[in-house]
Image 1 (cartoon, rainbow, N blue to C red):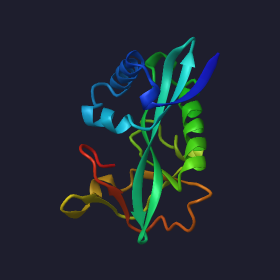
Image 2: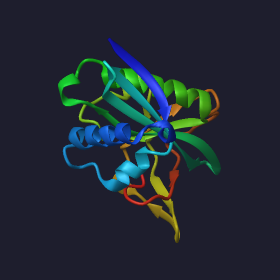
Image 3: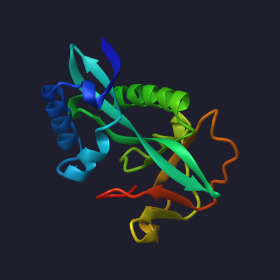
Length: 179
């Protein structure tokens, strides 16, 4: 039986954080960097557990995205992963369902950068692909992030309001991959 649990990073014991890092390192096959890890901690973790062992994970961290001249408090999804021997069994759908619920309750918008190898995964969960140009509010001014166009996805919440998916979208600065 699979249990889904949400927990803040600060409430996770060190051993559990290390186990999460191992899961992400394995799932991303060596492409999960220290910056990626730092982007993943600091918010809420949604865990799918089998017999108290994490088999899938998604994190929701707070960020500010800007579009059409307004800032949107955003629940940004990071570190979506399923243990290799548990893939294609609905675990990622479970953790994303809970992440979506948390985002809709606490934020104006949900967002993520789609690096999934499963085409259409987020779309079938109600996420929409951003169609406009993307930027980052870098320390020395706004920079275009054309390489991230077509990979950013958003989830509307009851607090989103009008949203033009063809407008420009700017994320806040952070080290590593900004999106």
